Length: 374
Image 1 (cartoon, rainbow, N blue to C red):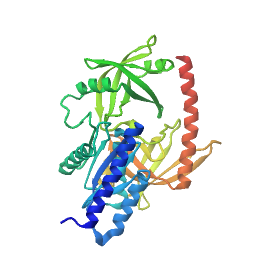
Image 2: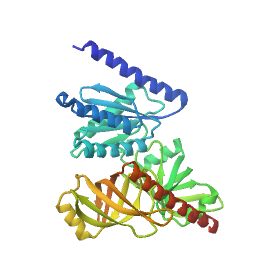
Image 3: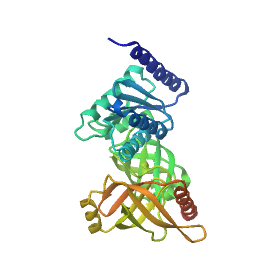
Image 4: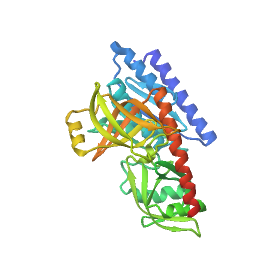
C-alpha cells in the first residue's frame, strides 16, 4: 500500500518535471535529465547528505528529486547531451575520490520537443537499466533521435540527423587553446561531409589534419579528417567521421601548453613517488610525461585511487617562479602520459589561473599572426 508520503512525493515530482517540459517547449530551450542509484544507509545518513550536497553544488544547484527507493533524478537545465555526459563522468570520478563510494548506476538523456513526460522517463529508465546491468559500470546515454548503443550504422544515422538539424560546433586547438566555431553541414553522402565555415578561418583549417564536431542530439564527440578546403565557397570537406567516448573537447576550462620546460613531482605521504614533465595544464587537471620505467613502478604500487600531492613551479608575469602544491588524483595513464585531476586551494588556483592567462595572451597573439599570414 502506497503511503500518504509516497503519494505526495509522486505528485510533487510529476509537477516539477512537467513544469520543466512546459518551459522547454514554450521557450524552445533544452534540458537533460539524469537518473542515478545510491543505496542509502540511514545509519550513515550524514554521508548521504554530504554526497547530495556535493552533487547539488557540482551541477550548478540543479534540482534533485527522489524517484523511488535508492534512485534519484537530477534536472540539468540548459545542458545538452554531450555536456551532461561529460559533467556526469567527472562527477562520478570526483565522488569516488572524495567519498570513497560509488553511484550504483547512471543514465542520462535529453528532452526532445516531441517528448511527453512518459516518453522522457521511459527513455531515461532504459539507459539507467542498461547501466545497472552493465558488466563494468559505465554511464549510458542517448536522445530521442540518436540511440548510440543501438544504432546499427551510426554514420547512416548522421545523414538524417544533419538533415533535421544542420548546425554543428567545430572545435580545434591552438597550443591547447580551444577554437570553437558554429558551422553548418550542407551535405553528407558516402561518408563525406561538406561543412560551411566562416571565410576568415579557411586558412586555419587548411593547416589542420582533423576537426571535432559537436551536435545537440549526438551524445558523443565526432572526430573527422579534413581532406580539402574550398576558400571560394568557405567549405571544408570531411571524411572518416569517427565517434569518440572522450576527447579534448570534454576538458572543462582553458588548457594551455607551456613554452618552457616545467618539471613536477608526485608524492604520497610526504614521499616522492615520480618525477615528470608538465606538458599541459588547466585549473582542474594536468597532463604529465614521465619515463615508462617510472610509470611501471607507479602502477606496481597501486597509487591510482590514492590522494597524492603534485608540486611544480610556474613562471609569473615578471619571469619569476612561484611554487604550486595541489592535491592530485591519477585519472588515467596511457603510455608515457599521466593525467591527474587536481584540487587547488584558492591561493594555488589563483597562481594557475594567472599562468593560464599569461600563456593565453601570448598564444592569441601568435594565432592572430597566423590568420594574417594565411
